[in-house]
Image 1 (tube, rainbow, N blue to C red):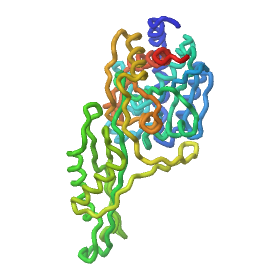
Image 2 (image 1 turned 90 degrees about the vertical axis):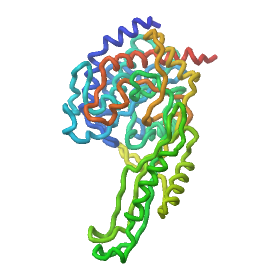
Image 3 (image 1 turned 60 degrees about the vertical axis):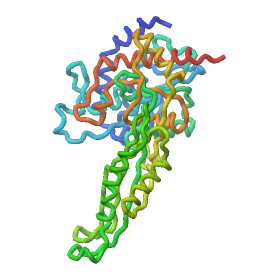
Image 4 (image 1 turned 135 degrees about the horizontal axis):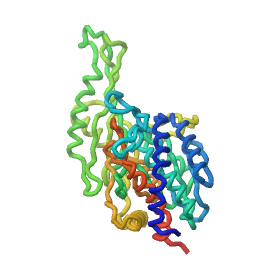
Length: 403
């Protein structure tokens, strides 16, 4: 194995093509279920830099392999993005990939195409510097994460596409080593009323006004949810409210609201639903409460239903995956990484939360810029992440020796 000084120097030498590749990815809009063009662009780059195998799985994820050893290590970057939002809120074209102030700017630079670009060029380093001894390394560009966290990896692991020993998520961490985050779920509450002409509302029962007190009840519930010293507090908020009737001149006979629920340690799907039901009952609101199921077609036409429940997950600080991340970072940069957790949700909800595969995170960019206008990532972060990804498989192998 070459010296780690050689590896960091080689990563710095790839700065220009790595940045150019990210610019190419940013230039391709790729909201959830519309990733076809960007996964083909990633496939082309993987083949160009020398991956041993590249293919699409049945859901449309793009997977690239380096090496063929018995120790299987995988890296993940979701390559769908949210939409731009208000274009006037951007100071630059969100699809231009502008380079300024040592950063690349545009939609997806942080969340999460920067991680993908760094992964592909880490694959180039692993291949050229022969860093995959005894390992098979998979770089996965996953789809539909923004719409349904973890669906992509739920498919990969349920269908046996890969069986990795460990997965590194390249979601933005500001170059910290992260070992978990709160869970998430989506809850709907619905009320029924009786429609009548709007000129005489007393003849009917307005579903909107019937359900409206639920908004304040959910806000009150948020204030008394459980806390955890590592993961933080559970939370809930109403993010959508809709009422409907025969016309705008009629009393609404249907109303629904959507609740974004973040789950801390010890909270479950069942406990969260019960809490909402009790909060609404205490507020005198008659409503049905349910969780949602995601059933949208992927870019290649497959529908793979998944309940929109994404479990809390945490890796112990002394887990070999965390220790391997620390070792790789220390060896490369002569510095221990900061170890923490994400605020938002990642594919780790399926990788570790549903399937129990060890998972840690290390990625370029600041999580706070995800989904924001003027999203941007330091180019230096891309280079650092690239070197870390190239060093991690050997660190994992050494941390978990097998006879």
